[in-house]
Length: 209
Image 1 (tube, helix red, strand yellow):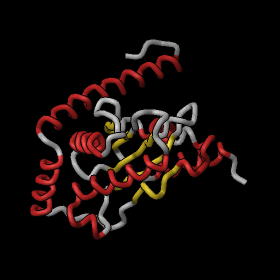
Image 2 (image 1 turned 120 degrees about the horizontal axis):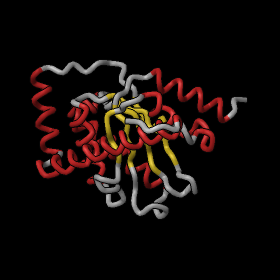
Image 3 (image 1 turned 180 degrees about the vertical axis):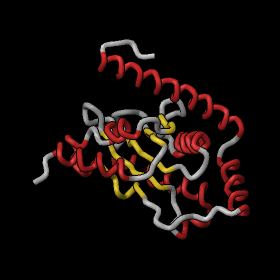
Image 4 (image 1 turned 90 degrees about the vertical axis):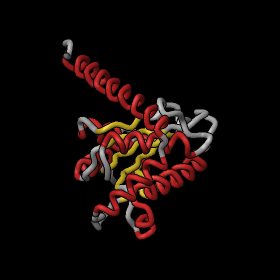
């Protein structure tokens, strides 16, 4: 029988073997008043919506955003939220802004654009460690295979498909929403760097610049 620590190590190694470059956290409100079952339904609709914006009708043929999703419950087991790693099919910053914007508009229980957290992944090893940190408590079930997806057939993006994709993204996110999302992304990137520096400082006992 594999221990929880063993499961965590296996999932950590497996995550690092996949190709992804964006890390995100999708949150709900109000915290502690929303059931995990309802949250999961909202998440499924969200990923389907994002798939359709990125791939259009090709999403119905099995083309989807590659993602690996893990559920966390928080320290008191009453704060259901989802972390994910994604292989971005478009410009990284644009994907972060689009996915955050769509999440805020998905349902009345999804959090505002500043409370979610979607940025390019700076250190894959640290991200993988964070993604798998609750495996000791939830076991391998922390990985949500129903929400996750691996693309095995490449999507050939010709000029026509690229133009159609750009139009879908523009329709899905207004100029004001794009502006707000980019402001949030700048803050999240800066805060990520600050947190990493503080953790490095704590480990070394020295200031990190």
